[in-house]
Amino acid sequence: MTAPAATLVSWFRGLRWYLREVTGESAYDRYVERERHQHPGEAVLDRRAFERRRQDLVGSQPQQRCC
Image 1 (cartoon, rainbow, N blue to C red):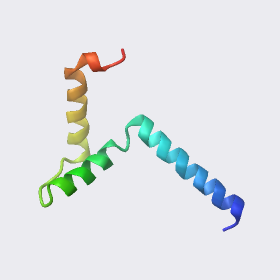
Image 2: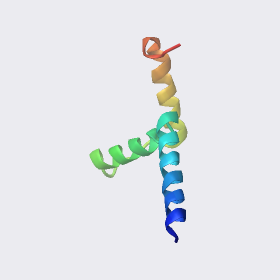
Image 3: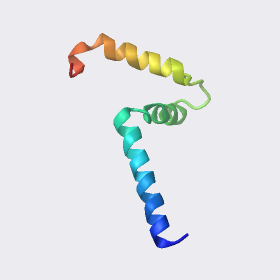
Image 4: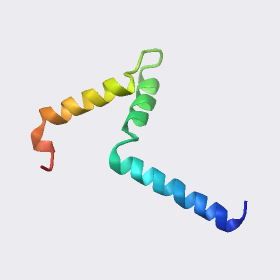
């Protein structure tokens, strides 16, 4: 791979990482990693259940929202 192509690939990877962090898309990945490390052998929530729990938590703490 040429240097400009490698730079472009690196830039897109950085952009993807940034957008996943800003939108909260990476929260599930961090949850799974943390749960598997802290509680090996136990089942983790699937993505749908995780998102539901996360939304319930946000809804139960309105003072934590900006709007």
